[in-house]
Length: 280
Ligand code: MG
Ligand code: MG
Image (cartoon, rainbow, N blue to C red; front, side, top):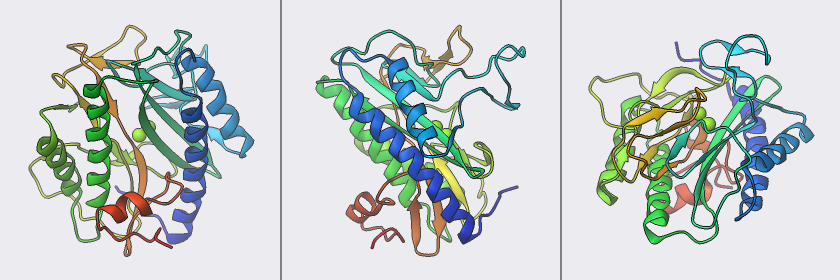
């Protein structure tokens, strides 16, 4: 069942999305060699709480919901996921300092008035090798290609097809297959699951009120993943670099509205020639 949001509910999700955008912007500004992911996590939490919102990853158990520490579940212990280099997603922010040349995926979610926002960006730490910069460029491009496909009348499968087409056109990178995007609304993870590659079947049509978190994950080597001993951190099996980008996006009759981007997606979608209600 896909939860369709009314325009008023999408406005509430926009407010939650702007909290996420602000938290990620604050964290992004603090990324430099020497900072620790745990410091970035504290910054994100204070940004979220100062806006009257609640971190949505903290104490989350996939498939279960929110479970306090000590209750026998391995709930996520932080506000952000910080995934460094070969880590793809769900990295736990720790005290190891980021170093010049690292890449770090920062994923952040917040709940405001019961509505969720979810977004991620992979950033260079200081100056990175050209090959790493290229990986990030293709990953971000794949995100926007997927978002651009969120048109009324298209189908869900068109999103994954657009993501895969972008990656294949610009690289020979791997596309992670074990994880993908998701519906989002009054829960962080809702139906439908959003593949990051082309698949068979027609799938549901995109209609106004569908809100999805689009989140391609690509790898410089093979796309196979391994789960770390902490039960959370997902990394590439071949230890190759990974990149992950995410936005929460509403389908509207005027085009995709990127709820977790300050400009609603106006600039990146505009450069692709894609109309959006965010264009003022
Ligand atoms: Mg996320
Ligand atoms: Mg997500």
